[in-house]
Amino acid sequence: MREKIFQDEWRDSWRFHHSNCHIIKIPDMPRSADARFIPQKPYDFYALHGGRFFAMELKLKTQLEGMPFKDITEGQVNNLKEARENGACSLIVINYRVQKISDKQRKKNEFLPKGRLNIVFMFEIDEFIDMDKNIYSKSIPAKTFFEPWVRKMQKAGEYWDIPSLTGG
Image (cartoon, rainbow, N blue to C red; front, side, top):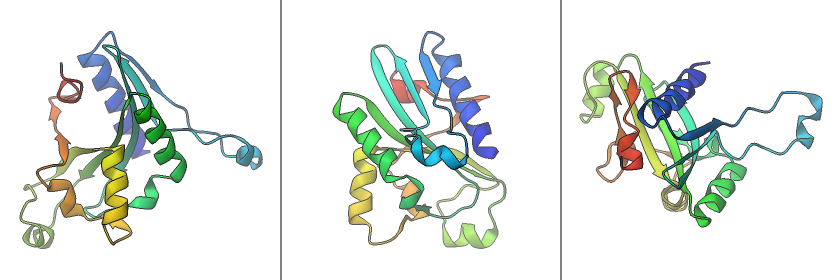
């Protein structure tokens, strides 16, 4: 349910900052016995703004921990990669929404802010694939998200700062 809150905020932020954009949430497939015959959805959202196509898979993390590579399915990776090969900006968007960061966690990870954490980290699909190949672990370590090369986004008031992603 919380992921839906993030997805709604993401969609509303796009519409707030770019009222003329076209953004669609691809509906989740119904859970049923026949679901195995329905193709997997390619990713969570797509948007068209200023002639640019954005394909986005959104994830929500509520604990300060790494993100398992398996959280992004092989089908999602392949669809994001195909979109990128056809000119799209293909992103994995991860919202860390942690209500309380313990002193122990902060001591272990001095890069963490005080209080709660509500930040978005974004990886282009090629960056994600490279990490999957080069990190000898089953997940992306939490500290990786705070590396300088990782694209980050904060909320600007009520909305996510979408113009920092779209360039305007």
